[in-house]
Image 1 (cartoon, rainbow, N blue to C red):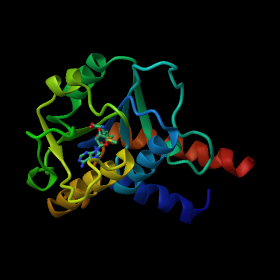
Image 2: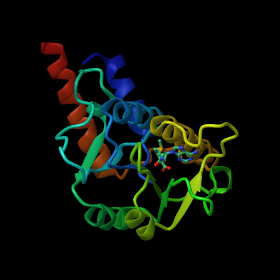
Image 3: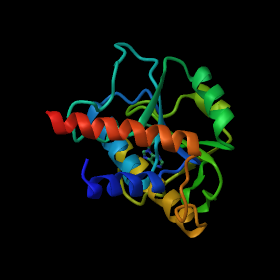
Length: 200
Ligand SMILES: C[S@@+](CC[C@H](N)C(=O)[O-])C[C@H]1O[C@@H](n2cnc3c(N)ncnc32)[C@H](O)[C@@H]1O
């Protein structure tokens, strides 16, 4: 690995955040999932949670090309929401859904400075009632048009960029945001991936 590439990996890792994650509930279109993963990489989210209760079950998300963002993220896959929430509860202080309901608060009234997981829903059904019941709150991105919802990958991008904006202001990107053990494990894994790519 060249010193420049190593520097690039280290600066990417330094921006990864342990206190922000995205959860996808039954998102079906692989293009949507890939777009979400790419934006997660862009804002420094390392861990992404995928709940998949619908048939047919997809084995892997977004691993189709070597340039895929999925190669640099850690995806946690679940076939039921309760198991996923048990893991989220252990790692994040707040779990917020994004369901289009009249009692939702605005994205711009949410405080993202703490540790938070954001749940996005299925293209047709949105976030399930079961998942909404387990969450701590629900927000929406205000819309002024005729169409009632955004594409899920767009909604995710708008939301996590607002979270990144607030976290940057709160200084979260000023120092490495991952626990040292996870940081070091990823640095080793990413190094192996680079070596492997060099041999291809
Ligand atoms: C296409 S929408 C689902 C639309 C579905 N008919 C409904 O009413 O829930 C897919 C997902 O994108 C996200 N989403 C779309 N528009 C949003 C908005 N304005 N605010 C927050 N999330 C949104 C939500 O996570 C939603 O579950």
